[in-house]
Image 1 (cartoon, helix red, strand yellow):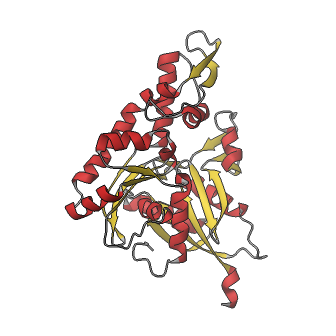
Image 2: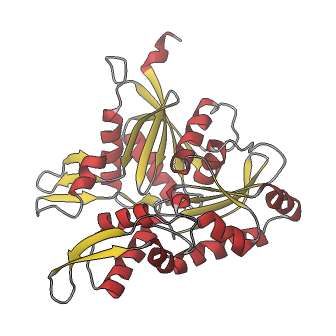
Image 3: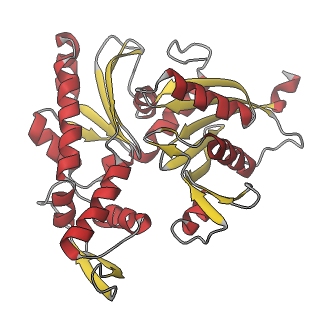
Length: 338
Protein backbone atom coordinates (compact mmCIF):
# COMPACT_ATOMS: atom_id res chain seq x y z
CA UNK A 1 0.00 0.00 0.00
CA UNK A 2 3.02 2.29 0.28
CA UNK A 3 2.84 2.85 -3.43
CA UNK A 4 -0.83 3.73 -3.36
CA UNK A 5 -0.19 7.44 -3.84
CA UNK A 6 1.61 6.59 -7.10
CA UNK A 7 -1.65 5.26 -8.55
CA UNK A 8 -4.52 7.63 -9.13
CA UNK A 9 -8.00 6.52 -10.10
CA UNK A 10 -9.93 8.60 -12.61
CA UNK A 11 -13.53 8.20 -13.76
CA UNK A 12 -13.95 9.80 -17.19
CA UNK A 13 -17.22 10.62 -18.92
CA UNK A 14 -15.85 11.26 -22.40
CA UNK A 15 -18.83 12.94 -24.00
CA UNK A 16 -19.42 14.38 -27.47
CA UNK A 17 -20.22 17.77 -25.95
CA UNK A 18 -18.57 17.74 -22.49
CA UNK A 19 -15.91 15.73 -20.71
CA UNK A 20 -16.18 15.31 -16.94
CA UNK A 21 -13.45 13.69 -14.83
CA UNK A 22 -13.97 12.55 -11.25
CA UNK A 23 -11.11 11.84 -8.84
CA UNK A 24 -11.72 10.82 -5.21
CA UNK A 25 -15.47 11.52 -5.59
CA UNK A 26 -14.83 15.10 -6.69
CA UNK A 27 -15.19 16.66 -10.14
CA UNK A 28 -11.69 17.78 -11.12
CA UNK A 29 -12.39 18.55 -14.80
CA UNK A 30 -15.68 19.67 -16.38
CA UNK A 31 -14.94 21.11 -19.81
CA UNK A 32 -16.39 21.12 -23.34
CA UNK A 33 -14.93 18.30 -25.48
CA UNK A 34 -13.00 20.47 -27.89
CA UNK A 35 -9.34 21.14 -28.63
CA UNK A 36 -7.65 23.95 -30.62
CA UNK A 37 -4.67 22.82 -32.69
CA UNK A 38 -1.90 24.88 -34.29
CA UNK A 39 -1.96 23.88 -37.97
CA UNK A 40 1.79 24.54 -38.48
CA UNK A 41 3.10 22.37 -35.65
CA UNK A 42 0.13 20.03 -35.07
CA UNK A 43 0.43 20.83 -31.35
CA UNK A 44 -2.64 21.61 -29.21
CA UNK A 45 -2.82 25.20 -27.96
CA UNK A 46 -6.03 25.14 -25.93
CA UNK A 47 -8.51 22.64 -24.50
CA UNK A 48 -12.03 22.76 -23.19
CA UNK A 49 -13.61 26.13 -22.47
CA UNK A 50 -10.67 28.12 -23.91
CA UNK A 51 -10.87 26.17 -27.17
CA UNK A 52 -14.67 26.53 -27.25
CA UNK A 53 -14.30 30.34 -27.11
CA UNK A 54 -12.19 30.07 -30.28
CA UNK A 55 -14.68 27.79 -32.10
CA UNK A 56 -15.96 29.45 -35.27
CA UNK A 57 -13.58 32.41 -34.77
CA UNK A 58 -10.23 30.99 -35.89
CA UNK A 59 -7.86 31.98 -38.71
CA UNK A 60 -6.01 29.67 -41.12
CA UNK A 61 -3.29 28.67 -38.61
CA UNK A 62 -5.63 27.45 -35.87
CA UNK A 63 -8.19 24.67 -36.15
CA UNK A 64 -10.72 23.78 -33.48
CA UNK A 65 -11.63 20.10 -33.39
CA UNK A 66 -14.37 18.23 -31.59
CA UNK A 67 -12.72 14.80 -31.51
CA UNK A 68 -15.97 12.95 -30.76
CA UNK A 69 -18.86 12.74 -33.18
CA UNK A 70 -22.05 10.83 -32.41
CA UNK A 71 -20.59 9.60 -29.13
CA UNK A 72 -17.54 7.94 -30.70
CA UNK A 73 -14.00 9.06 -31.47
CA UNK A 74 -13.87 10.57 -34.95
CA UNK A 75 -10.39 12.11 -34.73
CA UNK A 76 -8.06 9.72 -32.94
CA UNK A 77 -5.08 12.05 -32.62
CA UNK A 78 -7.13 15.03 -31.36
CA UNK A 79 -8.94 12.79 -28.83
CA UNK A 80 -5.66 11.62 -27.37
CA UNK A 81 -4.31 15.20 -27.19
CA UNK A 82 -7.53 16.32 -25.51
CA UNK A 83 -7.54 13.54 -22.86
CA UNK A 84 -3.86 14.29 -22.14
CA UNK A 85 -4.64 18.01 -21.83
CA UNK A 86 -7.50 17.38 -19.40
CA UNK A 87 -5.35 15.04 -17.27
CA UNK A 88 -2.68 17.80 -17.12
CA UNK A 89 -5.33 20.14 -15.63
CA UNK A 90 -5.70 17.83 -12.62
CA UNK A 91 -3.70 18.81 -9.59
CA UNK A 92 -2.13 15.51 -8.46
CA UNK A 93 -0.76 15.84 -4.95
CA UNK A 94 2.42 13.85 -5.68
CA UNK A 95 5.57 15.25 -7.29
CA UNK A 96 5.59 12.33 -9.78
CA UNK A 97 3.06 11.77 -12.51
CA UNK A 98 1.11 8.88 -11.00
CA UNK A 99 0.16 5.80 -12.97
CA UNK A 100 -3.50 6.04 -13.81
CA UNK A 101 -6.32 3.59 -13.39
CA UNK A 102 -9.17 4.84 -15.55
CA UNK A 103 -12.74 3.91 -16.17
CA UNK A 104 -14.23 5.47 -19.31
CA UNK A 105 -17.84 5.27 -20.44
CA UNK A 106 -18.86 4.47 -24.01
CA UNK A 107 -22.18 4.42 -25.94
CA UNK A 108 -23.99 1.10 -25.70
CA UNK A 109 -24.14 0.83 -29.49
CA UNK A 110 -20.34 1.04 -29.93
CA UNK A 111 -18.70 -1.33 -32.41
CA UNK A 112 -15.50 -3.29 -31.63
CA UNK A 113 -13.46 -0.70 -33.57
CA UNK A 114 -14.98 2.22 -31.65
CA UNK A 115 -14.37 0.50 -28.31
CA UNK A 116 -10.76 -0.16 -29.32
CA UNK A 117 -10.32 3.53 -30.25
CA UNK A 118 -11.46 4.69 -26.79
CA UNK A 119 -9.22 2.15 -25.06
CA UNK A 120 -6.17 3.06 -27.18
CA UNK A 121 -6.66 6.80 -26.71
CA UNK A 122 -6.95 6.34 -22.94
CA UNK A 123 -3.85 4.14 -22.80
CA UNK A 124 -1.81 6.56 -24.92
CA UNK A 125 -2.89 9.40 -22.64
CA UNK A 126 -1.35 7.59 -19.66
CA UNK A 127 -3.90 5.03 -18.51
CA UNK A 128 -2.25 1.88 -17.16
CA UNK A 129 -5.46 0.03 -16.24
CA UNK A 130 -8.37 1.01 -18.46
CA UNK A 131 -11.90 -0.25 -17.77
CA UNK A 132 -14.93 0.58 -19.90
CA UNK A 133 -18.57 0.89 -18.89
CA UNK A 134 -21.66 1.42 -21.04
CA UNK A 135 -23.25 4.86 -20.65
CA UNK A 136 -26.80 3.78 -19.69
CA UNK A 137 -25.33 1.54 -16.98
CA UNK A 138 -23.26 4.44 -15.63
CA UNK A 139 -26.31 6.75 -15.82
CA UNK A 140 -28.41 4.24 -13.82
CA UNK A 141 -25.70 4.01 -11.12
CA UNK A 142 -25.33 7.79 -11.09
CA UNK A 143 -29.01 8.41 -10.33
CA UNK A 144 -29.00 5.86 -7.53
CA UNK A 145 -30.86 2.94 -9.12
CA UNK A 146 -30.13 -0.53 -7.78
CA UNK A 147 -28.88 -2.05 -11.03
CA UNK A 148 -28.15 -5.46 -9.50
CA UNK A 149 -31.69 -6.06 -8.19
CA UNK A 150 -33.96 -8.51 -10.06
CA UNK A 151 -36.26 -5.74 -11.24
CA UNK A 152 -36.46 -3.66 -14.41
CA UNK A 153 -35.17 -0.09 -14.67
CA UNK A 154 -35.31 1.96 -17.83
CA UNK A 155 -32.92 4.83 -18.52
CA UNK A 156 -32.98 7.27 -21.42
CA UNK A 157 -29.68 9.17 -21.61
CA UNK A 158 -29.83 12.07 -24.10
CA UNK A 159 -26.26 13.23 -24.56
CA UNK A 160 -24.54 15.39 -27.15
CA UNK A 161 -24.02 12.78 -29.86
CA UNK A 162 -26.28 9.85 -29.00
CA UNK A 163 -29.44 9.02 -27.12
CA UNK A 164 -29.00 5.77 -25.21
CA UNK A 165 -32.10 3.85 -24.20
CA UNK A 166 -31.63 0.77 -22.02
CA UNK A 167 -33.56 -1.64 -19.84
CA UNK A 168 -31.38 -2.82 -16.96
CA UNK A 169 -31.88 -5.73 -14.58
CA UNK A 170 -29.61 -8.01 -12.50
CA UNK A 171 -26.49 -5.96 -13.25
CA UNK A 172 -26.81 -6.22 -17.03
CA UNK A 173 -28.40 -4.50 -20.00
CA UNK A 174 -31.38 -6.62 -21.07
CA UNK A 175 -32.19 -4.60 -24.13
CA UNK A 176 -30.83 -1.35 -25.48
CA UNK A 177 -30.89 0.97 -28.43
CA UNK A 178 -28.52 3.79 -29.28
CA UNK A 179 -29.67 6.40 -31.79
CA UNK A 180 -27.68 9.29 -33.19
CA UNK A 181 -30.29 11.92 -32.44
CA UNK A 182 -29.28 14.06 -29.46
CA UNK A 183 -28.00 17.50 -28.45
CA UNK A 184 -25.92 18.09 -31.60
CA UNK A 185 -28.91 17.32 -33.81
CA UNK A 186 -31.08 19.73 -31.79
CA UNK A 187 -28.43 22.44 -32.30
CA UNK A 188 -28.37 21.79 -36.05
CA UNK A 189 -32.21 21.87 -36.17
CA UNK A 190 -32.16 25.31 -34.53
CA UNK A 191 -29.57 26.61 -37.04
CA UNK A 192 -31.71 25.38 -39.96
CA UNK A 193 -34.89 26.80 -38.45
CA UNK A 194 -33.33 30.26 -38.06
CA UNK A 195 -32.23 30.17 -41.72
CA UNK A 196 -35.61 29.10 -43.04
CA UNK A 197 -37.96 31.07 -40.78
CA UNK A 198 -36.01 34.20 -40.01
CA UNK A 199 -33.51 34.36 -42.89
CA UNK A 200 -30.66 34.71 -40.42
CA UNK A 201 -27.40 32.81 -40.33
CA UNK A 202 -26.15 31.73 -36.90
CA UNK A 203 -23.19 29.65 -35.71
CA UNK A 204 -23.10 26.51 -33.61
CA UNK A 205 -22.38 28.33 -30.34
CA UNK A 206 -25.31 30.75 -30.80
CA UNK A 207 -27.65 27.84 -31.63
CA UNK A 208 -26.46 26.10 -28.48
CA UNK A 209 -27.14 29.23 -26.41
CA UNK A 210 -30.68 29.41 -27.84
CA UNK A 211 -31.18 25.74 -26.89
CA UNK A 212 -30.04 26.37 -23.30
CA UNK A 213 -31.90 29.67 -22.79
CA UNK A 214 -35.25 28.94 -24.48
CA UNK A 215 -35.08 25.26 -25.49
CA UNK A 216 -38.38 23.45 -24.94
CA UNK A 217 -40.09 20.23 -26.01
CA UNK A 218 -43.68 21.47 -25.68
CA UNK A 219 -45.24 24.83 -26.50
CA UNK A 220 -47.55 25.04 -23.46
CA UNK A 221 -45.06 25.33 -20.61
CA UNK A 222 -46.12 26.28 -17.08
CA UNK A 223 -43.76 29.23 -17.13
CA UNK A 224 -42.13 30.62 -20.23
CA UNK A 225 -38.50 31.76 -20.37
CA UNK A 226 -37.86 35.28 -21.69
CA UNK A 227 -37.50 35.35 -25.51
CA UNK A 228 -33.84 35.14 -26.53
CA UNK A 229 -32.47 37.94 -28.73
CA UNK A 230 -30.41 36.64 -31.65
CA UNK A 231 -28.23 38.89 -33.79
CA UNK A 232 -26.73 37.89 -37.10
CA UNK A 233 -26.49 38.61 -40.84
CA UNK A 234 -29.55 38.45 -43.08
CA UNK A 235 -29.02 35.67 -45.63
CA UNK A 236 -30.10 37.84 -48.59
CA UNK A 237 -28.63 41.24 -47.81
CA UNK A 238 -25.93 40.48 -45.20
CA UNK A 239 -27.36 43.40 -43.20
CA UNK A 240 -27.44 42.82 -39.43
CA UNK A 241 -30.78 41.63 -38.07
CA UNK A 242 -32.13 41.09 -34.59
CA UNK A 243 -34.73 38.39 -33.86
CA UNK A 244 -36.49 37.47 -30.59
CA UNK A 245 -36.82 33.67 -30.41
CA UNK A 246 -39.46 32.12 -28.14
CA UNK A 247 -39.62 28.69 -26.53
CA UNK A 248 -42.75 27.87 -28.59
CA UNK A 249 -40.74 28.26 -31.80
CA UNK A 250 -38.00 25.98 -30.52
CA UNK A 251 -40.55 23.35 -29.42
CA UNK A 252 -41.94 23.42 -32.96
CA UNK A 253 -38.50 23.16 -34.58
CA UNK A 254 -37.34 20.22 -32.40
CA UNK A 255 -40.55 18.27 -32.90
CA UNK A 256 -39.26 15.91 -35.64
CA UNK A 257 -36.07 14.98 -33.78
CA UNK A 258 -37.94 14.38 -30.52
CA UNK A 259 -40.39 12.14 -32.39
CA UNK A 260 -37.41 9.92 -33.36
CA UNK A 261 -36.40 9.59 -29.69
CA UNK A 262 -40.02 8.81 -28.82
CA UNK A 263 -40.27 5.99 -31.37
CA UNK A 264 -36.93 4.54 -30.23
CA UNK A 265 -38.25 4.45 -26.62
CA UNK A 266 -41.42 2.70 -27.82
CA UNK A 267 -39.39 0.18 -29.84
CA UNK A 268 -37.32 -0.71 -26.74
CA UNK A 269 -40.49 -1.06 -24.66
CA UNK A 270 -42.00 -3.38 -27.31
CA UNK A 271 -39.05 -5.75 -26.93
CA UNK A 272 -38.91 -5.65 -23.13
CA UNK A 273 -39.94 -8.90 -21.37
CA UNK A 274 -43.40 -8.47 -19.75
CA UNK A 275 -42.20 -8.89 -16.14
CA UNK A 276 -39.65 -6.10 -16.56
CA UNK A 277 -42.19 -4.01 -18.47
CA UNK A 278 -44.47 -4.15 -15.42
CA UNK A 279 -41.62 -2.89 -13.19
CA UNK A 280 -40.93 0.00 -15.59
CA UNK A 281 -44.59 1.07 -15.70
CA UNK A 282 -44.63 1.08 -11.89
CA UNK A 283 -41.37 3.04 -11.42
CA UNK A 284 -41.42 5.18 -14.54
CA UNK A 285 -38.58 5.93 -16.95
CA UNK A 286 -35.55 8.00 -15.90
CA UNK A 287 -34.19 10.77 -18.13
CA UNK A 288 -30.52 11.74 -17.87
CA UNK A 289 -27.98 13.64 -19.98
CA UNK A 290 -28.02 17.29 -21.07
CA UNK A 291 -31.01 16.68 -23.35
CA UNK A 292 -33.13 15.90 -20.28
CA UNK A 293 -32.90 19.62 -19.43
CA UNK A 294 -35.16 20.55 -22.36
CA UNK A 295 -38.16 22.20 -20.74
CA UNK A 296 -41.25 19.99 -20.74
CA UNK A 297 -39.56 16.92 -22.24
CA UNK A 298 -40.71 14.63 -19.39
CA UNK A 299 -44.30 15.84 -19.85
CA UNK A 300 -44.20 15.37 -23.63
CA UNK A 301 -42.92 11.78 -23.35
CA UNK A 302 -45.28 10.92 -20.46
CA UNK A 303 -48.28 12.12 -22.49
CA UNK A 304 -47.24 10.26 -25.62
CA UNK A 305 -46.18 6.93 -24.09
CA UNK A 306 -48.49 6.79 -21.04
CA UNK A 307 -45.65 5.94 -18.65
CA UNK A 308 -44.34 8.46 -16.13
CA UNK A 309 -40.97 10.01 -17.10
CA UNK A 310 -38.75 11.52 -14.40
CA UNK A 311 -35.90 13.97 -15.00
CA UNK A 312 -33.15 12.81 -12.65
CA UNK A 313 -31.36 15.20 -10.35
CA UNK A 314 -28.40 16.97 -12.06
CA UNK A 315 -28.88 14.96 -15.29
CA UNK A 316 -25.79 16.47 -16.95
CA UNK A 317 -23.44 14.74 -14.52
CA UNK A 318 -25.37 11.51 -13.91
CA UNK A 319 -23.15 9.42 -16.21
CA UNK A 320 -19.95 10.84 -14.69
CA UNK A 321 -21.24 10.21 -11.14
CA UNK A 322 -22.11 6.62 -12.06
CA UNK A 323 -18.68 6.11 -13.62
CA UNK A 324 -17.11 7.32 -10.37
CA UNK A 325 -19.29 4.88 -8.33
CA UNK A 326 -18.28 2.04 -10.68
CA UNK A 327 -14.61 2.95 -10.18
CA UNK A 328 -14.91 2.50 -6.40
CA UNK A 329 -16.46 -0.94 -6.88
CA UNK A 330 -14.45 -1.97 -9.93
CA UNK A 331 -13.32 -5.24 -8.34
CA UNK A 332 -16.85 -6.58 -7.87
CA UNK A 333 -18.94 -5.19 -10.72
CA UNK A 334 -19.51 -7.85 -13.41
CA UNK A 335 -20.48 -5.40 -16.17
CA UNK A 336 -17.14 -3.54 -16.44
CA UNK A 337 -15.08 -4.34 -19.53
CA UNK A 338 -11.33 -4.66 -19.41
